[in-house]
Image (tube, rainbow, N blue to C red):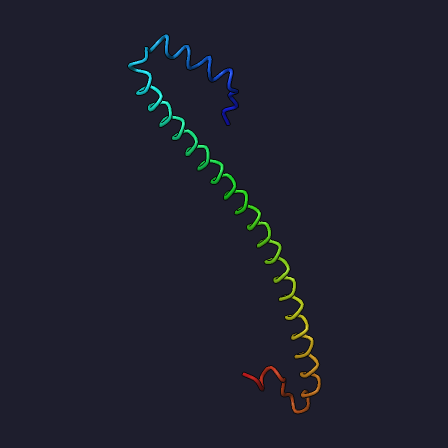
Length: 104
């Protein structure tokens, strides 16, 4: 996140000592550390939320595929059952009795 080398860090510390003075420097570093910690937590939470959203979208797409496949299988089973009932109707057509009427 923050890509600061040792030379840059040393330069920042020297400028801070000149501007703030040695008395205020520890408090400024403490405050800066807390601020950087907050930024890191916010960054971590944001990336975790984005990752979760991406995973949810992937799950939704996968579930949609499964749902379509299940609906296709259900249509096939319904077609097969209806064909079977139609052939049973043909077999039980003697005496004007349909198989569908017999199972009601």
